[in-house]
Image (cartoon, rainbow, N blue to C red; front, side, top):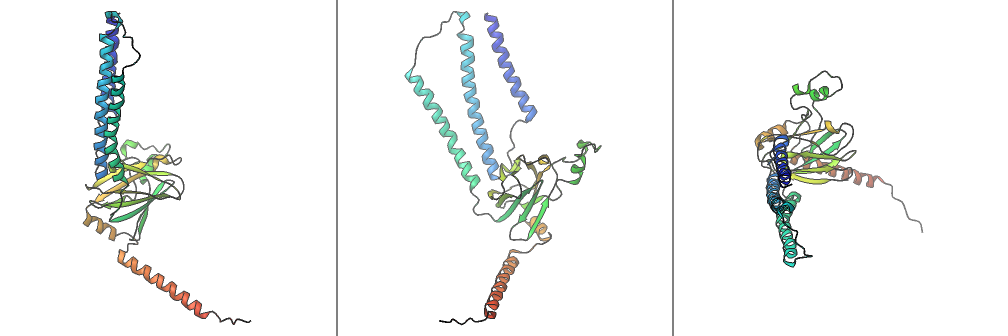
Length: 300
């Protein structure tokens, strides 16, 4: 019986170690750190909670395995007989509360940071459709639709005869990516034109639902130039899996050159002037119509 218990405990420990090693190699050693301030905050919070859980797991399972091995019946150990222990009950109530408080403080700071979009230098409206994204650079007149790239779209068709492994960034490439400047706080306004979608790029550290009739606000500030890929993270219909997100971050000077070359581009000052002229024209038309109205005499 003694040897049997030792074998059972050894197999359990070995299985746990193999599961942990398999997880590291199968799904990656860790979550990405990302390229934004908030993604760094989320990563640091993740690591803090992870190590707290590791310490708790080692203590709890360590105590359990020691009890199983050292206090088993085959060693002649008899179970203690008591109903409660006040000191132990105070300890196992107080310690978890302190641990939760220690986790709550940085988690709350992270949530506040995620929701603080004030001070953004530019606004971009993102609208989800089945199954594409529309990007509008507010106050510039630039907007376009971003859809799955043609080579991925052809390869995904049934009996296409194309090996997906031969397609670069299969199902993660688009025809018109979202281009943004680095080191610039950008407010992103999410909505939808049909069903619920969810705009998600892992390296940014968050995702936001795009809901019809509502606008959800998020923000980002990418520190490193590069291309970052994601997908719609809300089941939105039969082509949900073919709705990628691609963000290209460029240095500010390169972004301004790119923006100025886009169809429909107007500087913010020009748009403001056009809006003012439109309002003035409408007011002049209204005044003229009022003047042209015949006078009606009041008869007592």
